[in-house]
Length: 180
Image (cartoon, rainbow, N blue to C red; front, side, top):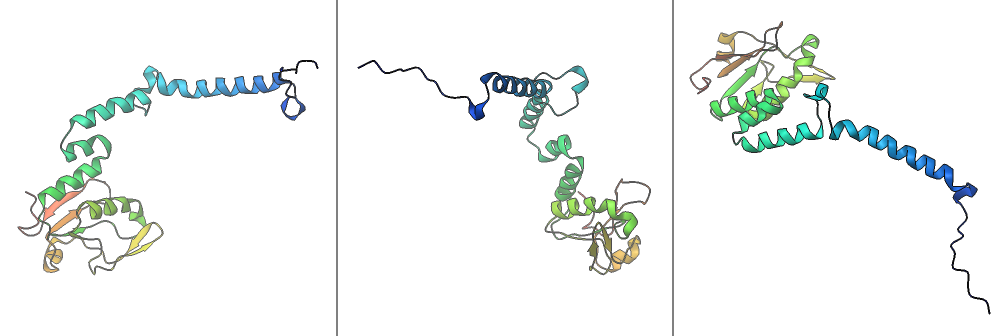
């Protein structure tokens, strides 16, 4: 009896010779290296972009920062603003955020969502009647910029957003609404 043939004579996949498979594998490997290279070894023009070395530096800086407000300044400044306001106001203060009602003010809706989230459990309103209605990107309701009218409706703080700016002005309406 002859000895068994132990050579692996597996037929090529799909009937193709092995060189096209190796070529495609090589091309995929080159493409992967080409895509990963700028992430691992960024150039000087990528100093402010999100790359792995930059994320590592940012993580180290965030790890050393123990104050949540200061940490938020590195990431989303509006979060830092809202968190600082949260620290400065009593939990039962009523806050009115003006400049949010109407289609023209729709892009500002993010400010309302951020402030409502960070100032919880405080009541944050954008409509004087407390019944703002959201319509696919904008709010409908009763706008108000009058500190006197807001004070008579029980609000402690007015956060005024002028129409030509995204800078929020803090207007205390009562002693409780004065940030400490």
